[in-house]
Image (cartoon, rainbow, N blue to C red; front, side, top):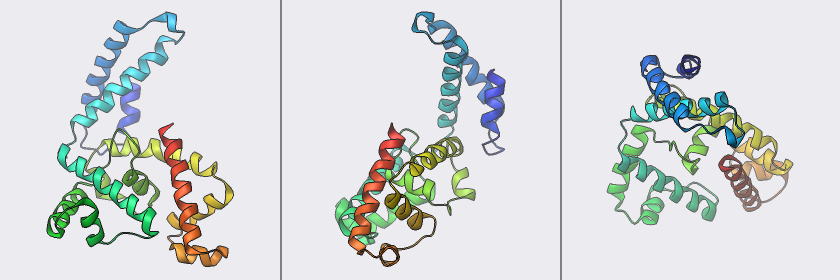
Length: 218
């Protein structure tokens, strides 16, 4: 079972990731499952063990990530600030607006923004604003996603959940999200096509994003 899970994960990872490291960490998870399993909870051992094995393998992949915690923290702050300004302005914020929002000198903002982008930070623990944006942006491929092997596993899982969540959106919200992220249209262009104002499209888009975040977190 451990080897099967390791092979399944490894197919979605860069070739440089050692499959033996996944197997070894999976064995640790299996031993923990043997020690902690309680049949009174009504869950079969294979199901429980698979969860523990998979979790240990993900922890192993996280340990391979060399992006510093401080850069990740700035990445989350940047994503949150960018979303706040987008909600307020109904457009992408400029560098000057971002620097003011984060209370940073412009030069410092540019330096940190470069470092965050250089490492392609994605949170492994929660679907943050930047994560959802990257998953929904089909242009994010190739080398950027190979910086952290966990990106492949987490991105595939989130992509499946996101597709289901988008399909459950109300029709108008689903159309706006599709035109925004897959047709790459601006709010103004979407509004013209649907016969409503740019501000209204922004409101619909913000509401759709909130539904998607909640669906992913649930």
